[in-house]
Length: 436
Image (cartoon, rainbow, N blue to C red):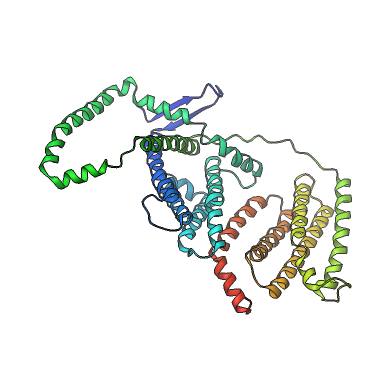
């Protein structure tokens, strides 16, 4: 066959054509190899642990998945390293995937929270980062196309593993076509001759050595046709899905992004809304400066530890609402000096609200000790403070890739929290303040 062939998918859309090179045909044996590896390492060893004598099946499930993911990532990078090295986002995501999977190996298996964090990483975080990695690789986005990134991220879960299964059979059909009939006949003839010779030689070898006969007989001692059929079905399904996913990522042109018509916000409505919100926030901040920052006496009936404990969930909700309001105003209104002043005030007051929530949380931790929930809450407030602060840049520099940067910081935030070894950190902190 030629090095390049053009295939036309007339069933979906007669106008869509794409070119795939001869290298795409290697995806069939590669997908088969990774499917067999998945069935052995993840399903048999990681889930059922049929050949291992360990007492923590979930822990070894996470390790087995990491082995498979790192192997798949190694193949993908080795095939596409030139293109990956040219894109800083792809380099970042490659390093992130490596660090996430290495972390599962190096963090000790101690503490319930660490194990839950590993399970969360294996089942949700690594697949999500992997999907973002493949979507970015395929479409080669610029940093401002947030609509296309989000849309294709969610569509990719359904589209990529199924949309090119037909191409698997097209390639197989090409191998068995008339142009390859001579090669096919030669392969089949070689297999038949080998079987004929083995039928003659094998009985002679078995009768010649009793030890060889013993091991040969033990190979088929536990032979179960139902298990064999089940494993073949699983391997076949994984092969088809993985082939379609890799084919869609590596050999299909990027998805065309439909630009939505931009809606312009009414300026009067925007300023009325911002003015009312900012006024309420100023009143709230005044209370924070009196009772929290200045440590003035609380009203009767309110204990300080109760005051310090309350408000975290509300802080997250308020910050989320403010970020949504800021994003809407930036994307659907003209950049004017007055608008930028109002949004800057909104961001500044939001930062004060985050600092207020952080002080409350740290006061409560000093009084009652560190727990997993308090650790992750404080760590999330640090991330929230960072992305809200970046809002200043977005207000005055519209082309700043705010949402992509926030997503990348979220990945870094998650990785650093894992390498912090939460269970060990909690024990160290509580022992340092002599809290049991």
